[in-house]
Structure formats: C-alpha cells, structure tokens
Image (tube, rainbow, N blue to C red; front, side):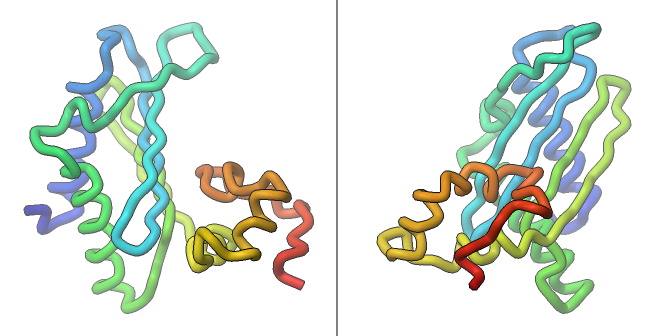
Length: 152
C-alpha cells in the first residue's frame, strides 16, 4: 500500500489533520519506536501561545486499523533496502499547520537492547527496577550520562 516515502509522509499528515480534535493546532508530532513488526506511537500537538502539548490518537484519522503502523513499517523497510541495514528504530514526524513537515530518524541502542529482551526475563525485570523503560521507549531515550548497569 505504501510504496514511497512521499506516500507515507502524505498518509501521516492526512491522519494527523483528521485526528486532531482542535482546529486551532499549530504543530503536531508523531513519534514511533519500532520493535520487530510492532510499533509504539506517541502523538501530541501544540496550539498558539501554549507550551503544553495535547494528546491525540492518530489512528482516529486512519481509514483502517493498523494503517499507521503499516506505514511506519513500510518506511523502515524502504530505508533498510536503500541503506542495507537497520538505519533507525525510532522516528519523529512533525507537521506544521501550513503543511510543512520534518522527519528525524535515530537508532537508539538502549531501545534495541530493551526490545531484544524477553518480557519475562530477569534482565527485563532489572530494567523495570531501574525505572528506565519509559525513558528508553521515549523519543528522547536515556540521557547520555545516565548509568547503564545492564551493559556491564
């Protein structure tokens, strides 16, 4: 269904515009973390003169269930084919209400480590004990100076 990056970005933009309940939004974002054939999405938008971001569900703007996930996985596959490697495991799509957009990609080694663990394993429990899973899964990831005892 999604053959080009242009098709994918157009799909993200269309879903965002349809999904945001506030017509006065100025900037919206979609962050995606990809683990195997699954995605984790965080969506938010900003309005004028308000530093607080508001949540929205991008799937509300899609025509079918899992369409946004399919687009995200297609984007990864296009990059894999072009770069012949895992170029990224997280990306952030930012859309402005004038139609301009920006896409940032990153390969997060902490996220790669966490996704490689069995959810029932001691190593995964240790990550939970360190209270870092949410940070690892976020767009920002762990700060560079954060201790990583699970790597020692």
